[in-house]
Length: 415
Image (cartoon, rainbow, N blue to C red):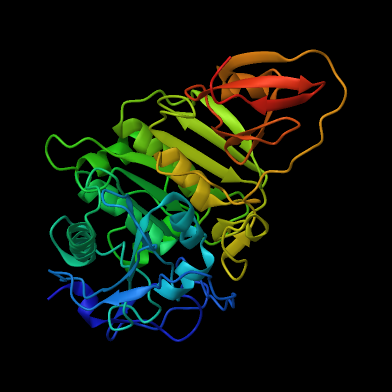
């Protein structure tokens, strides 16, 4: 029988699970990846609903599965698996994390794994229990079964399956990426800890705060010990707030060191970028479009999932922190979307008197750099007209015509 089958938690604070008969932990000790959520949000305007899946195959971890499939989702669409934090459930995370809006905008199917109180009284995923994180057993095997079931029933793209989670869910995300790199193309570790940080309940407290000090090679070895033979590690987005006192920011840095080492990448980033929040992102193993690891550091943010309700990305509440749309930027990093919210229709302006028309063909990145377009939330818009140009990068090329001074318009047929 798996270890989680006999665990309960003390009644005080946001805890890590303990076995039956274990001594009661202090309030300080039970601050394990806590996410006490009391969020009230408006109903979402969509015919699609978050629905339970009564059966999904092998379930040794005794988890529940919920799914959200937007109306008219085409075949071969991507799948994102989401793991809530302690004291949360699938409904909480669906309502507030921003992934529901991202699914509608980018055409994604969502699967939520939900912990049961019979496994863990505070609904924490058991990322510190060896029997729950080893390939083929426990909770990670249950989540793999959910992927297999959803892909088969909805005709989803097996090459575009991703997983993301918060806190205990973030720690379990890291374990899944190491145990099932053949199943997941990428992951998002939000306020989590490195793979293999803990081998038991009490050890987990040290991982959370102050964190463990290992060399990049030692951290990397903990992933390599789990990777199946010949498997390539997936792309990883790591999010952490600089003011997180529940899971210290040192864990974010250790996770970066771990995955960079596993992938054999230089320890210094290839590039950096400033995002809203204020958020700084570092890219390892490539630039903004092809990096293997991205580290998103949100200045002044505590413990939680970064959301941006004003941009139509999630809802603020306990451990859903109004800073930046992590769902949108993670989807952009994975290459499956990247709309970070904001107005559906970009602002428009009136042309003014100006010189004769001039047409320029260039990448969207160059248009922004040379003052013909502006960058907003990962997308480029023509100055003046506000015409949407697509993703802000060097790969997408568009033609713009200046019809009046400072007023540029998209030229679909090119110059």
